[in-house]
Length: 84
Image 1 (cartoon, rainbow, N blue to C red):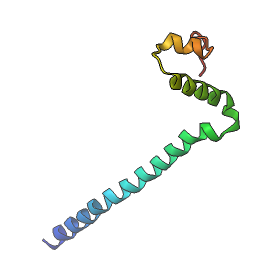
Image 2 (cartoon, rainbow, N blue to C red):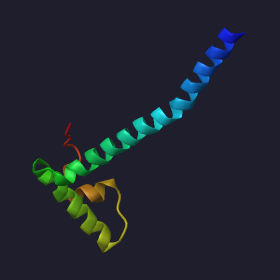
Image 3 (tube, rainbow, N blue to C red):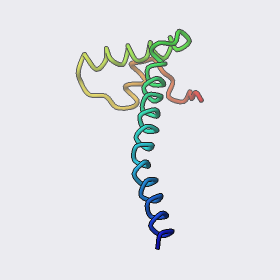
């Protein structure tokens, strides 16, 4: 009976720690995600990508409706060109 009680205490302690550890891991993943999302705006190598972001924002500020083809046309992007 004492061994069973000790085993249950260990399981209880482990289960009590688990949500705390998961919370820490989740927090670190969220910080990493924020860093990756902001990297495109901070990195000088992504100047071309930011150019399209700016042009896209300007288009949306003008208003109107767009479909995929009109967006490509307004941004001077070849819809057949793909980058990996």
